[in-house]
Image (tube, protein in one colour):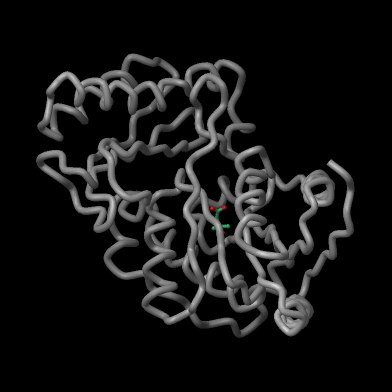
Amino acid sequence: MPASSTTVFDQPAALMAWSDAQRVAGRTVALVPTMGALHDGHLALVAEARRHADVVVVSIFVNPLQFNRSDDFDAYPRPLDDDLALCREHGVDAVYAPRAAAMYPPGFATHVEPGPLGELLEGAHRPHHFRGVATVVAKLFGAARPHVAVFGQKDFQQLAVIRRMAGDLDMGIEIIGMATVREPDGLAMSSRNRRLSPAERAAATCVPRSLQAVADALSRGVAGTAELAAVGRAVVQAEPLARFEHLEIVDADTLQPLTTIHDRAVAVTAVWFGQVRLIDNRLLAAGRPA
Ligand code: PAF
């Protein structure tokens, strides 16, 4: 792909001015929020963004507010030069890569509380995580002023929280969820995968296998969610390097636990490999995309 000109911003006001100029020129703006360590999953989001708008902004910011463990925040990969090169190669029009001091200057005090959607599932295991996500995404929306924003469905609950926030706060931004991009062996692409040892990386296929086992059991006629979840859990527990955290079957819109499957059911799971926590999900029946 030909290299193109990518403007890099590290201050919100400069990005706002650039985005306003795009709008004045009659161009639509798409935002792809990321924490960097870009992989093919992010590049698919960029390609999707390009289908929905004239110019594409990628934000790269490892957001301290959404980490509940400092070791996880410190260990999060930050290959900024490689990320910028990838953005240039893929024709990204602007990159927003602020430092923490530009994102959260002294005196910063306002947070977005996502409400009940942020307290279930992931939120129960990672207190304040979605408050941190909602706050930074609101700020990214404020700086980039996009018409549309594209997020991966791997972070299923995050997508639900952001959709709710954008609607509740009348942000006027179309939120697009994109199907999870997977490695050939089924593992969902994630920046965290690069922190797995080779043995853990091999073991991590138990995550998509567990979700596949749930789907297979459902198609064999197992309909109770407790039984289905047990099938998936057993796949993970058979893998010595995996530490099962949760697998739940919930309503795709409300994220409330289900006792029986309906056409908006989704299995969501989190599994640990050493210090690395991986999440994944699978829609279990036909319905509109999450
Ligand atoms: O999904 C992510 O990478 C992050 O949670 C996001 C949306 C960029 C907010 O920091």
